[in-house]
Length: 259
Image (cartoon, rainbow, N blue to C red; front, side):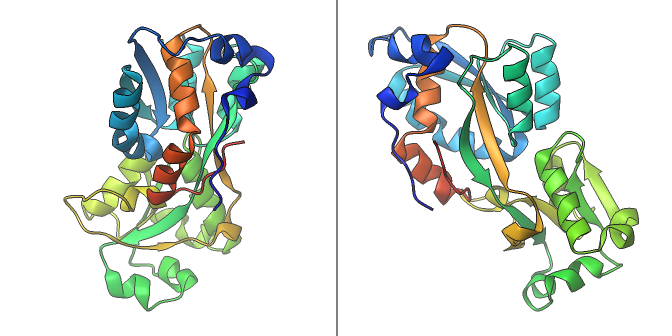
């Protein structure tokens, strides 16, 4: 996937012009409070040192399902940047005047994976047959609040398997909890984010196969600057779309497309 490098001039439009175009490069060290969807939390922790080293700012990370974070923000939670796992929640915040106008931006495109402790099951069986195995419980995130859960549900529906599998679904509050159900053995299969099983070394070993993108709507993950004038937040916003950052995201299992 082509990685695009965005110049500062490209950001200077609409309501973010003041935040991004009037900042001196010599700003004081400050704290950036980021609300991040569970699927992206580990990736954000991986790239956090690069941001802090280059900017001098401190990143504070709070992760949960996108819908839960959205609810917290509407109730006044003091976040500076919101990294959601879809486009819907950032758009709502923009419409409600809770986000800086014009700051809604795709930072990554997620990919769904089927994971299991059972390698032969994944490697030697057609996808539909794996999910049809009535001995296997399937962990997914809550589709009401977690975009990856919604993508998992859509995948089952497009395969014509929802009615057959609904009694075997194990619902996690978010995609991180759905993965944990598989790690712990409480579910034999899980439909989770590909990024959760790639990247850094983990204390457990799971096997996976990527879900074809055509089985669910694109998981366009958007970020938005929340209302306020925190120069450090604007710095982090720029960092997310820099070419080097986007390359790291691709290595962690995301397609990349900052516009």
